[in-house]
Structures are given as structure tokens and as C-alpha cells.
Image (tube, rainbow, N blue to C red; front, side, top):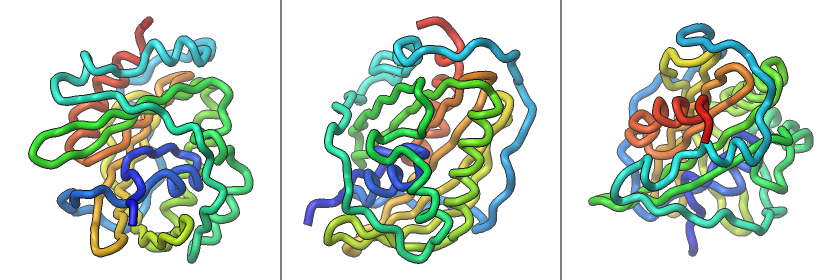
Length: 232
């Protein structure tokens, strides 16, 4: 049975679930309390500015030269997934009807995304998403999705004939930007287990989301935010 990719994640709740699963190699678990807190605010805040276009955001994504040796950019999938069902989490199931699950993104019109594979002793992946809108819409949209995901510590997702067990737990977000959100997602399927960290930082009219193995997210988050704040 082919396994779904662990870190082709976005914050649109059903898109996260549709494009995520367990990798061929399990990631080490990271301890975190199974509770949730609202987004942190403050710390290195920046003044708001006009939203950026998708083309401008694309220029501010990390690339292979930013990440270093061992990273290869993946082509973005073109096919949508219509066979995804959430089991045991009404908040996520309801949210799916209000989000844009067909194009692997939140329903913000200005967006850009890149995913990379990284090969060392354990193959893994990391992805970055950038969104731009006015600060209030960014804050409300991301908070809504994180709240929905954290409302169900455990649930299942059926993707075709594959049943994925998912656990969600709070993670500590670094004190960057204006608002921060972070969580750990544990995927189990077919006897394999993977832990993915997902951290979102809003800085003015830009939101940066980095997803992947916890170590890679921590290593590249600040760099991603710094590049997103500067011209491409």
C-alpha cells in the first residue's frame, strides 16, 4: 500500500489531512502536552504593510541554496483529493466545507508554497507556505484552523482505502513576529508512525508556515521568516 506524504501540509484542515500521512521512515517522537493554547502575541513585531502578490511571495520562499546541501525541491501535486473523510472530529469535518481543499491552500488569494526532500540517515521532508492578506483576516483564518485541529486530540482520516490515525498536541512556538501557532501531528498507518511539526508565524500582512520533522522546522523557521520579510 502506497503511503501518503507526511509533510506536504497546508493549514486548510482537510488539505492537511488529504496530503499527509506516514513517511516510509518513522520520525522520533517529541514530547508535548496534549492541550492547546491560543496564539502567542508579541515579540519582534513588525509594522503592517500592503499585502503582497502571489508572485512576490513566491520570490520570498526558501530555495535549495537557502536550505543547504541535501535538499531537493519537489514538484507541487496537481491532482485534488476528493476521497478524504474525517472521522471522530466534527470541528474539522465542518471546517472542511468552509475552506479551499481543492488547491492545497487556505482560502487566501495571495499564496505561495514549496516542498523539499532531505536525505541523510533518515529521509524526510520540509515544506513552507506563505500567505498575505490584511492582518485581521490572516489572524482569524489561521487561528480558526489551528483551533479546529487542536479541538480533537485524536481522530482518524480515511483517504481512499487508507485509514490514518492522527494525534494533535500543542507545541511551543518561538517568540517571533506578531502571532505564533505551533502543533505536533502524529500519523500512524500500517504499523508506521511519523511526527510532523507545524509552526505558523504572522508578521504584519505575511504568514509563514513551516511543516516537517520537528528538528527541520526549528532549524529553518527563523530563516524562512527573515526571507519572507525581505524583497526576493
